[in-house]
Amino acid sequence: MIEFSEAQLLEWLGQFLWPFFRVAGMLMVAPLFSADFVPARIRLLVAFSLALAIVPLLPPPPDVVPFSAVGLFIGVQQLIIGMAAGFVLQLVFDAIVVGFQTVAMSMGLGFAVMVDSQRGMQVPMLGQFHVVIALLLFLAMNGHLMMIGLIIDSFTYLPVGVTGLDAEAFRQIVAWGTTMFAGALRVALPAATAILLVNLSIGVISRAAPTLNLFAVGFPITMLTGFVVMMASLPMLTSTLRLLLEQAWIAIFALWG
Image 1 (tube, rainbow, N blue to C red):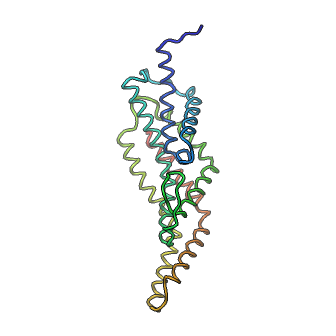
Image 2 (tube, helix red, strand yellow):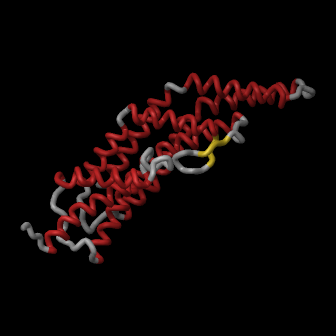
Image 3 (tube, one colour):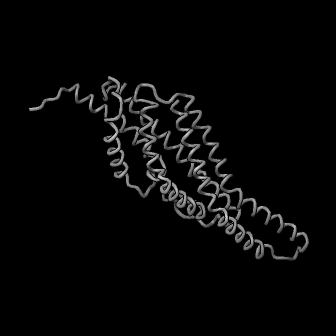
């Protein structure tokens, strides 16, 4: 009969539990996995499977009882590390939402909204359409596999221990939020510039012909211009998404020092 001591069981539990917290924290916030259409049970099952697969590859955990105060503190640290990495990646797709939300408002399509399947909130249909395309591009670029590799590499750069993310890391996360607005500007700039030129032209026409019904003429022209420019600039979404993901990867590795 095989017998295990309490110390051995606690050691094995800690060796699995702390990586599980980090993986689960990332899947809670990361794009695609955190979507509302992915059930919580599926996320837990994926986190459990990934943690079970990577535990043999990890260095020995700290000699701390998992259910002690220090063990619970380490668990919270691992959860925060995973959520921070997933949050940085999620901001890439938020940049696309913000960018095309600006375009939709400029085109007069701000009233056309639908429920975002990832966040469970209403967003302009134009932004949701491009988010779906971005998610498909993310899968086509094997972004989900790179994300799994990222969480595995995190244990090399930031092993499980009492120390986690410091104040400088949280400052970098806040600073990374500015990249969301820069990415939104990069995404929305072609269509927004074209719509601005159209609006300026309509303004000049209104001064030359004050009796012209600008709402009947300007609204269709603005909407048509926006659609044409977005259709022409849609292939650029791949390069923009790849650039933002590369910057996100660099930012995440910077968090781990």
